Structure formats: structure tokens, C-alpha cells
Length: 172
Image (cartoon, rainbow, N blue to C red; front, side):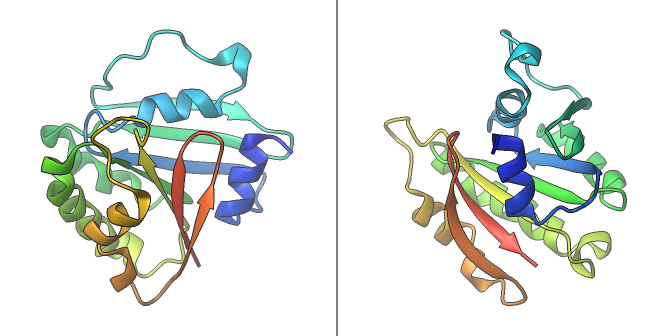
């Protein structure tokens, strides 16, 4: 089973075509993660910061993915909500080495989870605690605590491991 098939299984996606929103603060590694999910022959060697958003389309053996790579820069974060209604899954990326902005990441996550287009839907959200290989990174457990993921009572959480990074899954 390939990485995309495993990811779709974790997210509980059963449709043939899936629209995924990739969100997180700027420089958290969203574009890099999306690049790693693509087939090796479609991966880019040069990753540049996303301005606004970009759209990536690729397929696994069972699914066709359309991933909206949303810029995490402060001036673009208000654009995220315009895509919530059509999103069928969310990947939320956290830079686990950026302790100073963990509070900002939590604020953005709270805003996301409380948005009417998300709050009343059973949309799967995958959390990537990215950059865990860096010296100053906090553990995925600490990221979970800093984001107060344990306070979300309407969902079941379970830790998972993928070959890219550690993740947490909001399973609905």
C-alpha cells in the first residue's frame, strides 16, 4: 500500500475524488509535505513559499487528490475560510521547532475548528507535527499539549506514524 493510500485510509476517505486543504502557519512545511505525497516522478526539487494558494492534483491507486496548498502568511490566512465548504479533509501542519509561534498556530487552529463550515461537519483533520528532526523541536506529545488537542471532546484522537513525520488524527 502506497503512502497516499495509507493517508486516505487514516482520513477515512472513501470517495474517488477528494479535495484536501493543507493549512498551517507560513514556513511550517505544507508545500514540502504535499510534494512528498506526490508520486516521485512528479515531485519538485525546488520548494518556494506559497503566495495565496496553489493547487496540486495527483492520484494514488484508489483516489484522485486535489490539494489546496494555502499560504500561511498572516495576510493570506483570512482566505482559508473561503475553501472550507468544499474541503473534504484537512491537513494542518505545525512547525514543531517554532516554539514562539505555537500560540499563533493554536489560535488559527481554534478559529478553524470553530468556523461554521467546519464545526458542524464530520470532516477528518490530520495534524502533522513537522520538522521533528530539528534540534529545537518539541515532541509530538508536547505539540498536542500546546495546541490543547486533548480538549477537543467531540472527536477521537489517536497517534499515528507515517514515513514523513509524526501526526495526530482527528477521527470522526
